[in-house]
Image 1 (cartoon, rainbow, N blue to C red):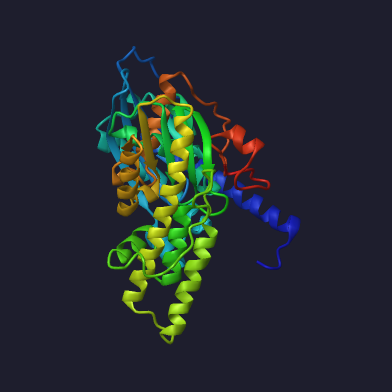
Image 2 (image 1 turned 135 degrees about the vertical axis):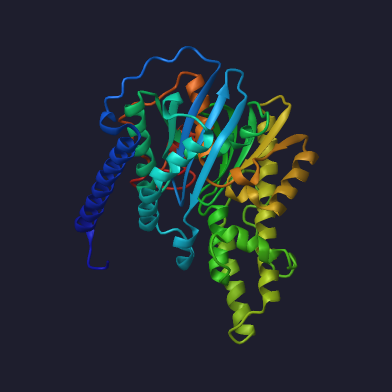
Length: 418
């Protein structure tokens, strides 16, 4: 696309976005027609009598998983996941070693209808029993976010139920509450493919940034390392599997910001050092690294990430204790939270520093609809809903004030990431 420059390129991107949005609108119409026939936008709904619980459909489409879930939240805050459907796109993106946004958006459009239908069917309920629909409104790949959000808007109009726009990161933040009694406040380590942050969480929508990556996210670094070594996609599980047979001390790699008084992260230097280490192995082995060499490098890389996360978290724990009297709770969430070595190290760190560790089950570490449904249900319980003109957002910091006044990463037209 070298021939596309300036305004011509922006015009083409805008046209693609409008075409994508029109397709989403058409998709919603087909979905609702299938459910309600010719009365799809004229459904007359009798007001529900006051009940002791709320049924919320959560829709997630921010990256490369199309997901939907039905969750029941009781008035006392107890939750039950009635269904959770996740349609992965791994086969689509594996040849490229990473997520291709255009392909991801197309796959979401193809799958969103069936995923929502399956979630409601698996929950064993009727569509008219839903009290609200929650959907990721950002941050994420904008094509995918639009798909899920538009589908949720259509359901909101047709079923005459509230729409709740959810910050995808807040979904991760509350994910341990899907299975554990984890009251506010707590210290959160959000570690995923697109974000690595440490935040104080005081309540629904109440976040204070303590630290953030200044460049790459930990999960993205795992994916790039897997691509460098030819381990496949998604990179996190591939690197962890290879590292299981390696020596974590075999290759010397940097640990940026170790020992610094702040709680920020940096992974770009580690990513570059891992690339150089692999290139050295290739040159030393005349173009072919052995499986043992790969295992040692993978283990050394994984240990470096683990050390960085623990060191930065220890600093954040000290910061958190200055403003909170305890008992101290620590939550790790996001895709990288599924890594067993990192979980074990964080568990020990919590024990040593008088924190109780909470982590979601592995099935809720990656992107899923249940966490979006829960975030939506907790907002619904507080009377917080969204207007139908709510927009999809490529970036949406949890602590907006800190991001606006002192951005840690992400700039330009999209605004800061954190």
